[in-house]
Image (cartoon, rainbow, N blue to C red; front, side, top):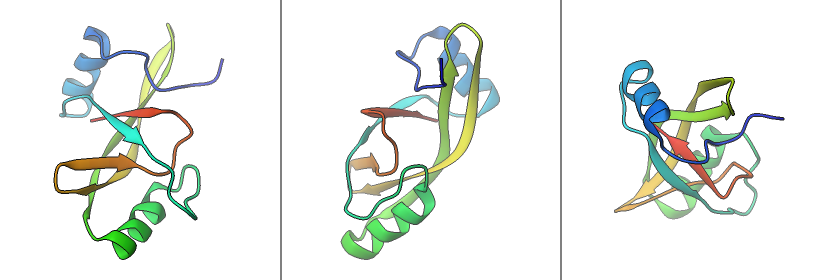
Length: 97
């Protein structure tokens, strides 16, 4: 089974985000953006800022191999006003801290 976004923000995931990442786990919606590339979050966010304004929010994406491990990868999402989204993943939503 390949790593995926955790199915839920349970106690283990929340604790991982708080202790290892010094953050709070939160869901971020994934939205398609013309020309975006999977796993190229930094380039995708830069393109979105150029096209739509907004800003980059730096943090971590959390991956899980259920029952085995959690890991975090440095990650960027795009934000404008109260809206945040992730342009470079294949999941429906990503877990970020």
